[in-house]
Length: 421
Image 1: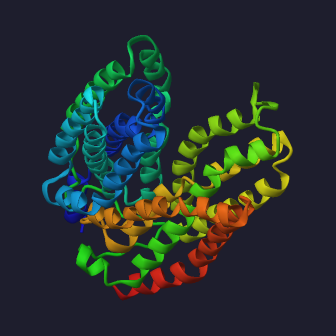
Image 2: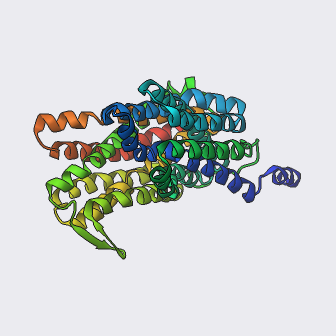
Image 3: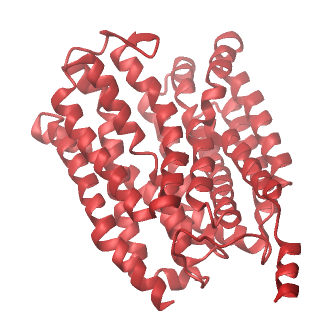
């Protein structure tokens, strides 16, 4: 027994190695964040130059989101097969090419092509970085996934001002070109440092029940827990997006959008303040709730977060006429929403094993694309009822249903599933 223990200790990776792999993945995520979150800075300047109309230009963003989410299962399969190093480094080239195309795009089809290539590149980096984090940290899977997802959610905050300044001083084409090349080169170089763990290199979790079997994607699609998680992911994702998309209308309707609010040493108009804390709290919540789930369990954490989200949306509707409460409650909504990008990948890998984690979570991640397709229904609902109140009711109820499903459907189902396997 002593010899076996000694042998195991020799192949166990150091904490420095594990955290190094996590940090490399986070850096790659930060480098692709602008493809999604920095896009809004370019829409106005593009329209000013070509007068294509904002709606037509925003089709590029929709193409980006769809290619970034719906192709991840295929990309995840290739990452699990060939490793993150080859796939992520290669995608760094796509990330650079996408913005270089945008810098010279003089037609909508060319702009859409850049968006599609960017979506493919970003999807590989996102899926590969999250998948690698899940594999290296089975003992702190929620925290690792949360920190990695936070790199994507909050990473653009570092470059928003530099990009805006370059657009103002040198034009949006220069910003696309130089930031595109810079981001892509960093992904290529850092991606070369990534690798998946070998057998015995990582410790098992002692706090969270996990399957000892590795399930391939065809097996996963035959199991009920996958579809329960998918439905919950869509409900929380769409519900949160619907509410967030209506923040500006509700602030204007309550006539508080431009009312100054002073909190934590800052004074900003209420709507600006609410939108500003979005990125901060949306980034913080991912590792926070991921860490909590490592301590008390995934479904228990889902219940707390989704319940907070539902109550926050209801409270925002009824108490948002107060500018201070509007900022605080919108912050609560943002804080309780972004954790889906840490809790669901961790739960998926707990259930189906780490060998094919990138592929399996890639299939679940398409729920983000499904949720995005449902968000325009909020406009239909608003037009039909003549008010955005119905949108908030639907969003809150979807979150509360998902919270109940986490405890009373997913939790017992997952326990039975792991016990059988």
